[in-house]
Amino acid sequence: MTSPSGLPADLSGLGNIEGYAHCPKTVTPGLPSTAGGGLLKWYDIAKATTPVTHDTDVLARHFLAAETAAGRLDLEGELGFVILHRCGGDFHFLLVSSWRNANEMWETVYAKTADAADFSLFPLPGPHRATFCVWELAAVNHEREAFGRYLFSARDDDAKRVYLTDMYRGGA
Image 1 (cartoon, rainbow, N blue to C red):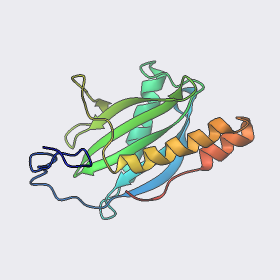
Image 2: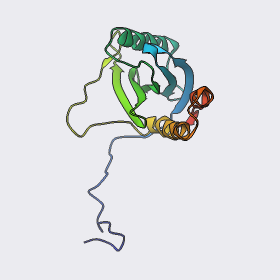
Image 3: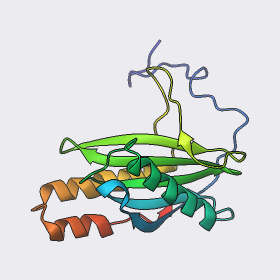
Image 4: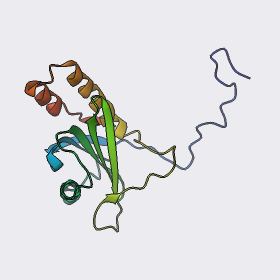
């Protein structure tokens, strides 16, 4: 049976999340990356008490440079952004997003576990799979809006500078 809003009267079997405590995280902009001939904004996401370490940031940037230099990730001439997310403990996602085909965001996902020496491509099996978590979406939404403003601009060098310096900082 549904209500006048079209929603089922009984929602007790939907969206139940057990054994999970949500916590705040912070999105911190970093220096851009020029890997592979593209220019990508950089965001770190982590709990304020356990930020992304300098060593992990350096490792991620070197990894991204190596991926593009080896031709495994082509970013030539592209604008976009990177999210380095410390998910918990020492597990990190490295999400590389670039704008293609005028208005599409394309993404490559890498991860580093606590026991791994470096990042590696993260397998995403199946047709219905994870994209961004609630914390990452704070930066992604900002980037969607910032790139939308760029698309409405003259798209000249000044507009590119405006886009590239328009960074999100804050809670997620």
